[in-house]
Image (cartoon, rainbow, N blue to C red; front, side):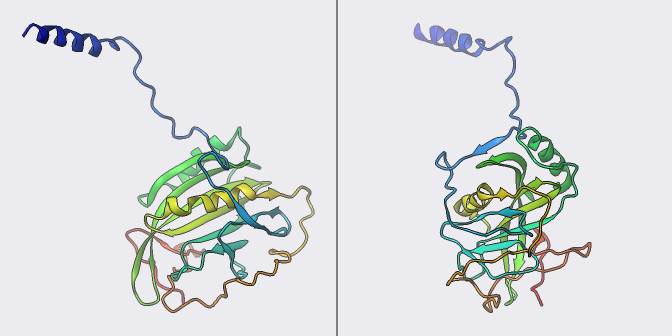
Amino acid sequence: MRGRPILLALLCATACAGCGGEPPKPVDRFQVKQAKHGQGYDLSVAVDLPPLDEDRLELSVPEGWKAMSRSSQYVIRFDRGGSLGLPRIEVEAEDSPYEFDTLTAENVEDFARVLDKAVAGPAIIEPPKPMIIGGTPCARYVIGVRLQTRTGGVLDAERQVIETIYKNRLYRVTLLILEGDILKYRDAAYAVVASIKFQEGEDFGGSVFGDMPTLDDVKPDDAKSDDAKPDDKKPDGGEKRESAKGETSSPTK
């Protein structure tokens, strides 16, 4: 019984050791995160593409993926030949609605805070976080979506969205995967972002897609009968390829 008072005294001393000290600081989720090849991330690429988006940028095909056939809705798309058309990576470009000319290591945190307010909603799984992937300043977030297949089935899916800005041009790299697959394919989208090389100069002549390389395994536009085909319409009249969870998109006509 003698040992019990001594043990209690030690426990009390340990518990009070931090008394009067400063409480732990909360983690700042807007702290910039680095993602570099070989440091916990696989940013391997297989094929370098010629200039895209009217010669504004160059990027590469992630290793193990294939460039899909051209579409006027996208700068470029990649897939792995899945039966449902998933996983898939889509690169889009538009004039930026944000007051950032070009993202840098110094302002990417501010951009993530602005984006956080712009995309806030119940479908958000991971809110916007500032990152530097390879050498590309960007912000990343994840939302939950539901896809309706042509056979009437409904799939729970997720969209990992990475956005960057260069010379008032917003680039969005979206990874569309089945629910639970994000860690399996996350780095492929990171590899695309890390491979981006923006072209200098003001004269952006040429076509949207440039001269695409010949790839024997390019996937045709015609999808299989059981492909997941999300809706093409947003409520505001723009394009949308899937709906937020809680709503089910209809298949493409």
